[in-house]
Every structure is written in structure tokens, then in C-alpha cells.
Length: 98
Image 1: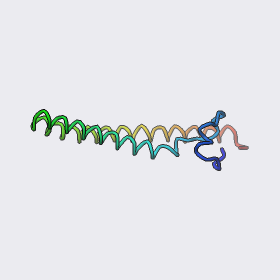
Image 2: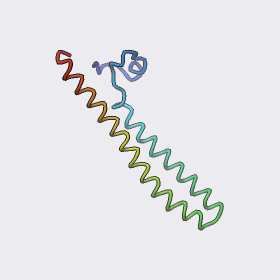
Image 3: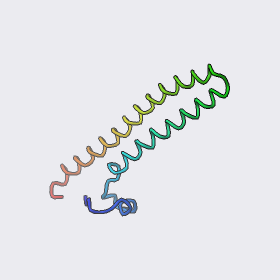
């Protein structure tokens, strides 16, 4: 598995010899956190436009929901990394000369 290829060369690697998940998992995690944060802010602003009580409920529910969503997103990304590591270990075990 050559590591000297750059990111864009890996995108057009039709033989799938280069694993990109390790390179993009940090970016996906940041995008997930920012996307969730933007959604919560929007949800709270709309809630406060309706009434102060709905805004406070939206604030509390949004923070709790964001925390849960971040936990789920982190778990899914870690699961993807684990699956990739398992695949690499299986590949090394079945092809010891590579």
C-alpha cells in the first residue's frame, strides 16, 4: 500500500490500493460537529422567535441532542477505522510477502 501518493491521486485510484479513510476521518468529524452546532443554533433561534419557553426548551434539547449525535458520529467514524484496520490485518496475514 503506497503512502507516497497524494490525496487526489488516491481519489482516482480505481484499484483501491490506497486507503483514504484515515486521511478524511478528522475532516468528517469536524464537519459533523460544525453541522450539528449550526443546526442547534438555527433550532434555538427559531424556538426563541416562537416564544421564550420554546427557545429555552430548544436550547436544552439541542445541547443534549448535539452531545448524543457527536457521540454517535464519533462511534461510527471509529468503527470505520476499526474495519479498515481489520481489513489491513487480514490482507497482511493472507499476503505475507507484500
